[in-house]
Image (cartoon, rainbow over all chains, first blue to last red; front, top):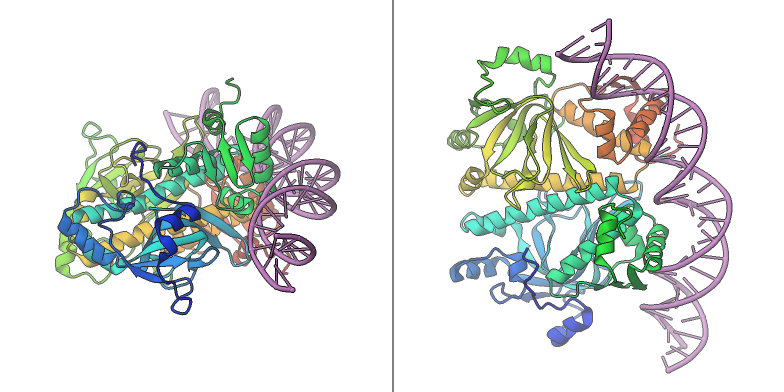
Length: 271
Length: 271
DNA sequence: CGACACCTTGAAGAGGTTCAAGAAATGTGG
DNA sequence: CCACATTTCTTGAACCTCTTCAAGGTGTCG
């Protein structure tokens, strides 16, 4: 929300390891990709992203009870899948996800990329089962928030109730933006908008405004943007030729945010 | 939800007029497109679409207090606009709307078409102002539901609370579907999916499974589907040539729902 | 009835896709 | 730690879908 605030969060796997040394004794037997840890929101550094502000200590303590459990997800495995029963929303603590939907005939579409502090699983509410897959693009950890508990508590904590509504509304507005992108933008505009969006969200989490590491493949970017992976690659190359970005595999350095903005806003010639 | 139930609702302007003869004394001074009427959900024939089921009489009466006011919107005018303060959600009683978002440089994108029983305005919750325009494509009437009252009441009526969550989740899932369409389908597939969706929703409201009247222009369809109006027109013509539909301007008769389904599911040859 | 909005159709052109090949990075197992 | 397999990325060339531009037709409303 307020882009000036810098929240020191580790996103890259190495930083995460440093912050949580070896993350306790992870027994492969108990749960390969669903290890659970008891935690608390009240001292979580992501609170400003996940939770409403201005809660009393009492209210925070009650929310701690709702967000009772954490779960680790290995890179490449799913947090939930299309068709699975919906019970909980998930707040991403660390890591990076994609969500994607599929048709019966096998086509699929990435509907979003989610990072620390963002909430996933909202699609499952309407029919009590999920309608998309959530796949971890790097080792991740989420807070599990049973939805019936959220509903229960948000009847009593007005700020939480409104917060839930805002999160869902924000997702609707975000998707409007994606529809605009998919419906009316050309390849360069789409990729420029994508990069600006990513770097803006990363910056809100304390990362650089100009450098980022893509956690997804060209194909996944293409799926999200309604383009083929070759087109994504070519467009990256064009940006490099034009001196707008530097690209080394998944490492991207933005040399001119202004140029990207001009591309998105379709201002063709404007030296 | 249950497609078998037939809810007798008037959608076409003439039927609407018959149902509410001359709609009282509409003074242009008071409010050109915001005439208000006191109403009640408890005897509304759209209740099954708008409201949770299994409410007690007491709960229904309290909801009547929330949905206190109706508003008429003339064809072509807006229910709300991008930038306007958000105060209420709207349940469509009669008529047909489009919602659209726009970029600074003038491009715009239709994000949805809404008909009787559907809720619009959810985009406004997150930032307390609307981020899209809602335009009536035919004379319409909506129930005004102040959102603070909805939140208040849904703290007390669990079924209402969950219903609000489901409505928002449903919108998120719907938009996933549109993203899939925009991101991975070809023109014919998009138009086929569009027609099937429209006729399915109309059928759920008691209309024909095979005949429909488009309330929007080719350009608006194109905007929604990420196509130019000429492409929409050409694709209609192709469907006519193939004997899949009959088209007379905005009157469409579906001759083979099965063929449309095959097109959407990309089953090229399958006699 | 004339003005205007909407729709259809044709022809040329652009943008993105498809197919293909090779390079670079990453992961795996010996 | 290195060799090999695999995945991911880049680039080229031909092709195809959709767009653009243009003209004319149809329908609607004051």
